[in-house]
Amino acid sequence: ETGVTQTPRHLVMGMTNKKSLKCEQHLGHNAMYWYKQSAKKPLELMFVYNFKEQTENNSVPSRFSPECPNSSHLFLHLHTLQPEDSALYLCASSQEGPGGSETQYFGPGTRLLVL
Amino acid sequence: ILNVEQSPQSLHVQEGDSTNFTCSFPSSNFYALHWYRWETAKSPEALFVMTLNGDEKKKGRISATLNTKEGYSYLYIKGSQPEDSATYLCAFRAGANNLFFGTGTRLTVIP
Image 1 (tube, each protein chain N blue to C red):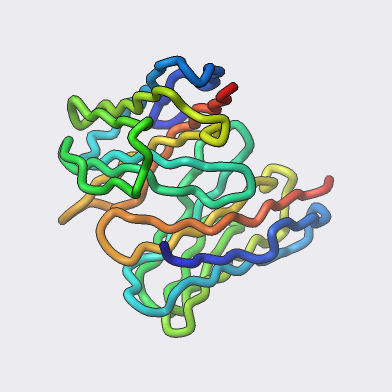
Image 2: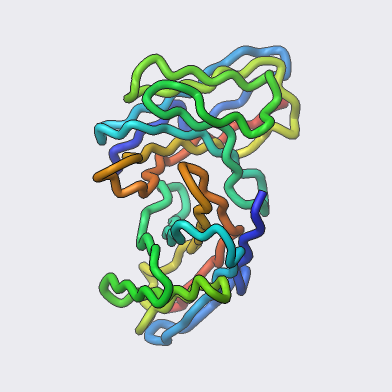
């Protein structure tokens, strides 16, 4: 359906667990993003990677740790989360710079529940 | 954080009706305005990217206009169909990378 895939689609974890979210883009883009959507709030940018380098960290707590090993893969490592971190986590990618459309293409998201 | 507002929050229309919604954004430091369509359990789908004041874009029965001087964009749907039911998001871009999203307008088209 889309060029951006995310796994898992659903995740339930306890506050002491460690888990990771995975995102893969098949579009040849040079930028990748993590967004968080909490109930009745707008999509909120968490992290931006350009050419595998983190260029934005939107004051995200350290219990969220991103990793971008190459321009096609993006991870979000989760540890000691709080119940208020329960949300939908969306990954996106785009082609930035000359010749790029700069449109962000989204994955379907991971629905996270922290107990 | 920039304030992007969408109205109405939700909307129910009969099949065949035409409808429109509004996105308001800061009128300074404008770079681009994006519209997305988001069906439940699917990925947000890009509809339009608008960059110039007075831009009008069209895709089938959906069209959008842009006024950067006063900071608003309208999305129009002509002859709504049940498959148009979705949340429509707008996002304001002030510079590199960062998109600031509104909370969306949730459209339900009643057959």
